[in-house]
Length: 262
Image 1 (cartoon, rainbow, N blue to C red):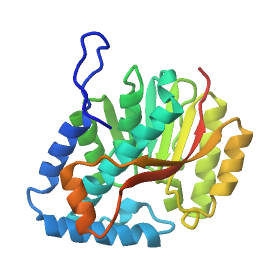
Image 2 (cartoon, rainbow, N blue to C red; image 1 turned 45 degrees about the horizontal axis):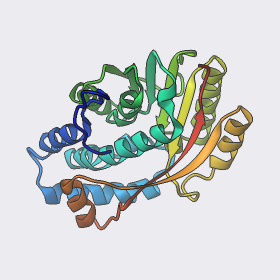
Image 3 (cartoon, helix red, strand yellow; image 1 turned 135 degrees about the vertical axis):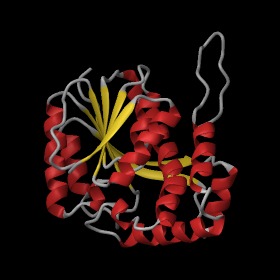
């Protein structure tokens, strides 16, 4: 996502990402050093590979890990979601609401809402109170309308027509039974007109269930894609990436998309 200036002819608003990231960095480095957050990012990187059957925020038992998750993975996910939404042309439809399942710090729903022409309100749903509080801060700082609540995302009643539903890096963190329940809930919402967007890591080893889900979405009239985008990152994020021994020259992910009814 690049910085743009308001244009009197095109009336394109400025990119909110740089300002949001600066405030995010300040928010989480007030009490923690760069090295403390770097260690947390490394621990979270290992957890991403090893976790199964747990929501990632269940591993955020310390201030350092919460800061690492928010300030490092949050911006990466925000940029990835924005790129995917543009490629899928999600802005071609308007939505009354974006529901973000397993919202974490709220970046996925916010990225979609910012790409939508009518800036719909976001409802973030997560199982931890810290994530809910962080998501509300994200919405407010990015200038989008949104609220969040703490509840079981596999048992929530989802709206249909006029709703966009995103589950980013969420399904893979559920148990097999909860993941199947989530798929059923999502397909039911899609049958009632909702648009559904699923995002997960590109690694097939980390998502052994993906082939089954992809087939189901394709049969329902959707599409499945693998994505690679050039990573244009703020300087602090580049430094953290290098210090943690990571290498995000590309933003990668895979998606399932059901566009819903216009």
